[in-house]
Image (cartoon, rainbow, N blue to C red; front, side):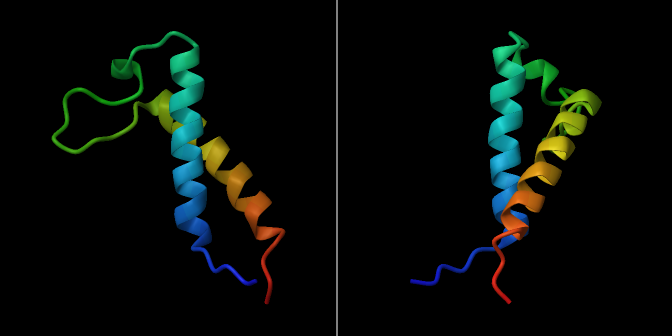
Length: 68
């Protein structure tokens, strides 16, 4: 059975979940994950760095299983 996924979307979702899990497990409040002063939901700089690391990890991991 072949399953097609959008690698960017999947990596983003997984990285978002892992970022939230990691930062809340460090006993940080949501205010330390998201910027408070914006109408658009954005990560704080630290949370963005954590997200970027997880995104790269998941993107590279998923890409290994790509079928051309």
